[in-house]
Length: 311
Image 1: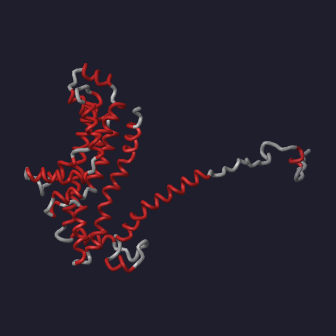
Image 2 (image 1 turned 180 degrees about the vertical axis):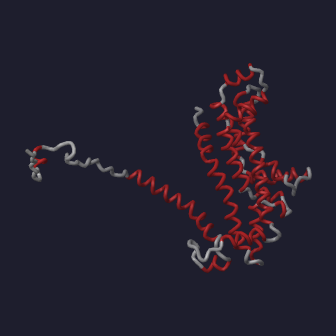
Image 3 (image 1 turned 120 degrees about the horizontal axis):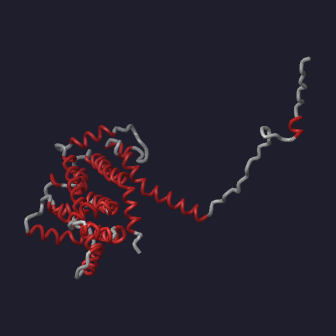
């Protein structure tokens, strides 16, 4: 005898009860979140602020791709036959590659000045935080007073001083004032007080390490987030500095980019293409700052957070 099977009619399985494979699917219903008015207002404000700060950068990128005629004959917020590489080539080759000289000068002023200023700020901040000596608080208050002084107010006294010792119109006239960072000293002291443990210093001294070795081999590593923060602030400040080189320098071969572009803009009445060269040069000058911000951003945030933990 052969076994016969009776086909199951449609719907019989559902009538017999739902099984594990044919169980009805239920869609979970989550309560819909209604955005709060305060949150919407905050996001709208941040978006407006981002547009406010990024719109000039976008215009600069667009304008750097145009010719001198197109700067005035086309819309400023869209591209019109872009020729960025050609413009960059003309900028770099103009007047015996003077722009490259200005860029190297800016890298010298900002790079060397920021590095040495960071090292001095770290040493001063660590000393004010961990050493006990007479006049420590008075010295720190003098540093805080230096934070409040504008750089433009010090430019004329510095010029008179450097002119007296014969250092005007030299690289030292811009480098030496860049080595002082009152804000860096302030930040390094706060960070050293919270991050550098006294017991760690005592253990190093017990092992026979001298103060110089402790500072360069131990303290600088612990304070690296704050040092990167100080370096970034100082680098940007020196790179964008305009008034001090204007007062100190008279030789255009020693100009930084900021002062060199101003001379191009002034001479644009006689040489019209210098208008485009000024715009393109400003675009190129922003690139090192953007790279530095992107590379050092995480250290910058960490440094500010660590320094703010000190109560």
